[in-house]
Length: 376
Image (cartoon, rainbow, N blue to C red; front, top):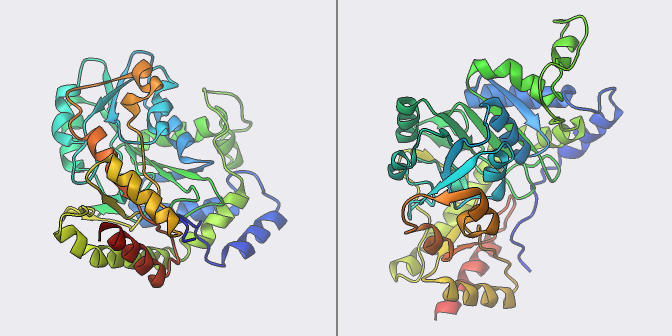
């Protein structure tokens, strides 16, 4: 069986994890946490970064930082993972879903402005498959209406928009290091990116259960105490050590995934030219990270048949999100603004092919040949 995913592993992780286990600082913000955060600060060019146990909690921190209150509205696509919405629903926000673009599966920036009301607090663009949303247009809207922009860049590490790293364009950004992502910190993991210095001090406090403990350890206060709301948003240093073993060779991992992506794209051109499948679209302003390779079929019926055919030939594939606005919680906690022209239709056509670090060329060729045989 060719699996859909294998968690990335470079061989460097073990020595770092053992070092972390033997250190005097196993809990959050140990030596490896600081090494990782330094790497992200320098590589991404952000004001600061904070590791979190997962991306969900990075988004929850973002919702607290922009002071989401009951009744506030947050605009986002319906085609996303539940955490994108949950982080704001937990603070009492109403989610306003807008349609996506059919080419990139990202939020349609042309529909955002008409969804804005007096209650709108933020826009949450989701960079699907590590391909950027149209951030210039989104930031222009946000600036004109004094709105916050929280980038859900869960899939976007090492991707960029007009040369700027994803997650560093809005006020705040969130990344995932889940085992299905390009880099993992041992199964789960996340990162909050801070691009506005006004959030830096409070972000540390929220992450430390609402205390100024970080300032205490830096000698900035004589003792630490409870000063704000917060929660336990620190990962262990073992998680950070595992992650450091991967980001230390980030370019190698990135190049490997892009080589697999490009091979899929080349080998599937013939089927695309015959209108059997649609291939991903990468806008000229975007540099992607090979996070996923998907194809689109004509409809959900054909997708289901192809999935079953591939499974019978030992190839594991998955489809992605069921649009949130069609879910029970999506109806209760949000509304869809405008017409659902592409969100449901395109989501039912999309099929994700096996993609992971170290995927063999022979396996990619087998996947493509099996897809070809399905159509012939």
